[in-house]
Length: 564
Ligand code: ADP
Image 1 (spheres, protein in one colour):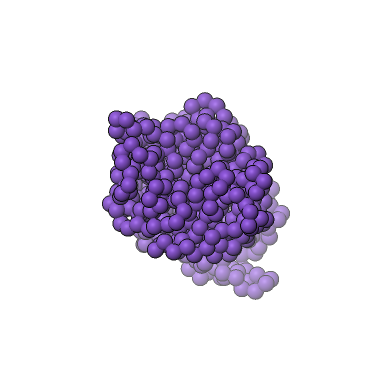
Image 2 (cartoon, rainbow, N blue to C red):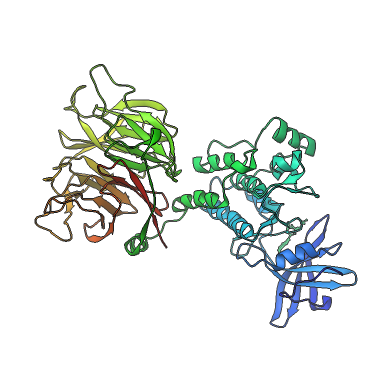
């Protein structure tokens, strides 16, 4: 053959292989399981026997070395035979797995892991300027330890930065519109198909099943139809698929963004032991990534009073105005909630605290009424419900602290009566707990204990950890000045049972620039220095990799990233 053969993988003689069985076939040829009598001993391998020599697939595979890509072990190039010798993936293709077991909507853990393993090799290929061009469930293979590996580089090609001509057609149910309409490939071609694979992982279905090429082309390009997004799909994934299927390839998200959205779901799928998490946090470092909120409709007015991060990564911030502003995790303003909706005559609104449901569909807000307000993820007012608050009246401020537990019960702190009321998320009262400090800031741990912080500029009592019957289990002590410190705690956040607390002043009444953290037994664990602002409120992304800090008095918020 005229084309150069790779030098980094061995050329092997055919007689070193013994057939075990046939495992796949297609227009290209067939795939067999064989025993390779290698210098290291007998190895089970997959042999892709091509009808015609394909130096393209061979050379591309030879240039790749990634844990999530099927490894090329060697090749056979003899008179009538051109074979690719590949690492054997005993679990067969992802498509046959999905056909047999159905989609992974009931197995979030496997869904997230496989979505990640399907995505990561695309980032690697992107780095090498290679388009796979045929991403689909039959081309992902499963190893004996249930990992996904990308295979079949028969159509793969080196890409230029711009759109390029494509001679061959890919599998049309996964095809991006530019290939249908222009016969061209864009650098984001694989992103479109990858989203179809993620859709397959969730639904288990074959995309556009039973429809022929012309019908799919008509639907995708003329009618702008896309595969139906199931109602039970996690919102961040649903949004991601829509973006990946944008007709305009420029607007499809980057592979890094896709990885971050999937990674954000990992904590739902894997529970990192608390002590490991605490170690990570303690060792940091947390690095300032972005400051935002300084202008336009997303300008944060004076104080960032409270902040929450929705599971899809959106950041909602209460400032000194009646509008609760929502930003993307990149700090880009998205929309705002108007907390004056639903007010009775004579009432006014100063939003206090915000929290979000575990599925990210609802924000809950307390303002100075007796009601908890609800908003959709895109800031639409969804209604409100009155808390059991006995001493409040329609004009007396009453509710302040707000938190949600792992079962989506909403806890509301009443500053006047010092009760914390537990409600179902659509309003019905469940129970209440009496505490002995003002429950201005609350957070609920996975162990059903409640962290309570009081509001006062200088003379607040220290935050407490209380049981679900109201018994004080621990009172937090400041690490440097146990007796005299003046607590001014404005933000409490409990993440994986580590407590993050802002304490804005020290015993000399000067401002502090740190976030303190404690274990659930009240033990001080360490602090994160925050130099760019006086930290007032804080929240953490679902995967624990980003810390959002709302500044005091400077109309800004900051995103800190945990460097691993
Ligand atoms: P095609 O070019 O027809 O898509 P593939 O390389 O995808 O060829 O192989 C076709 C089928 O052969 C796969 O769907 C899979 O079932 C099987 N196969 C391919 N490579 C391997 C491998 N390394 N290990 C196990 N099975 C494989």
